Image (cartoon, rainbow over all chains, first blue to last red; front, side, top):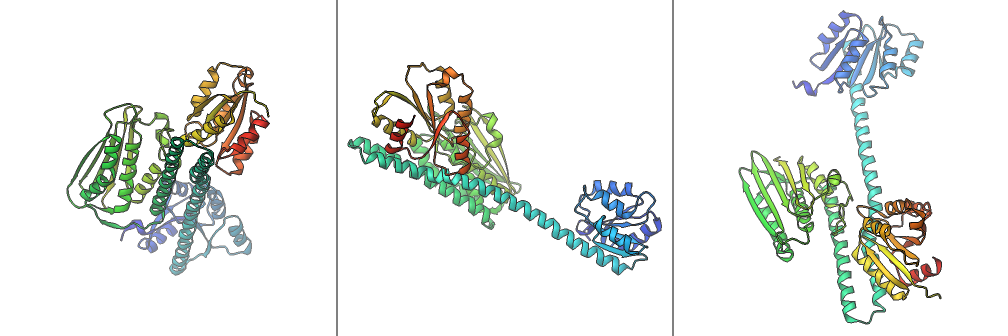
Length: 363
Length: 131
């Protein structure tokens, strides 16, 4: 049986005979750790963060089981505590519950069935509590994100609308047709910006909420999609676009996540180009071998200042004034990568370019 | 209405909003000159080195901008010497209806008012009567 899946139980008792018989009875059912005194028990706790149930004898020479539980609880609040004792006066029971926060109370001499049911129940309780803590963390994270979102949405969604309203106000009193044409173009840009933001938002929630759909992926298809999207951009913006793809063996992952990743990186590479240079270039290289895909997107654009490199994956972080950015793109990339267990590295030098390297394992 | 000329500075990362502000300012007929900056850092540099022409300068600054936001701009501005600061009147502009932002604006002594975007003929008229 896989020992990893067994419940990890720590038993503290000063009587070696008890320890031996405990291990003899339960070593097949649980991953049993034994301690002859509380110091040893602490060492086990320190070394094993995954202990889910602790059983302690009440009467030990250095301290009582209740005192031991009371002492370890602040530092190790998660493992569930079970007290084993020969004394059953009401005072010690009250102490065990109030001071030691014990989950169960087992009377000596124990029966295997009692111990087993106590451990199993305690473990169930442990799992539920841990899950709850995890869910709480997730919920907190979601709340924080929602706050951030609500703040940004007013700016990024209202911003373009207010700009257009401003121009309309101006246009009402404009007579010159050239002026009016300029204004229309500006309104168009504002609407494109809004549309870009909403599309990113849609990406964001499809990564967040969407289930992964793992299929076999042919990177030639992905390359074709990207060519369809960016060949025109390349011509319009006068940026050369070098593409290379090679695939050895099958690769399985979530198609949409990979497209979101490559698309966002390319979109940035084309967007953040230096204005006054003739040799604008974007490279996309995708290689699949040994069950992993390595995607490299390289540009010789404006680069990222070293001081902002560690912030580029933060939601709504914008490192530059020059272009329309939503602060969503790289955050979405990171999010999508987290879902498919990928990694990303970034190297950049200001005014010389940026390289993103993505590694995704096949599922 | 008075017709004393004024200097204007517009700081907004959105080109579009700069364009609108510039047009509206020019329409008032009160602008001696109007400088537009898409980066707050550039505006700050300009203010540090600007020649004083004896006229008041009205500054419109957006709150949410990358690199240096409106609040950071005002904080840096407030560190300048009194001589450098005295001819400036700062107005903060934002599209956000965020209570925190509005409250924060009140905490800066050098900021006259918080204005909602977009800047319109009416708002600028009010500003010109108020500064």
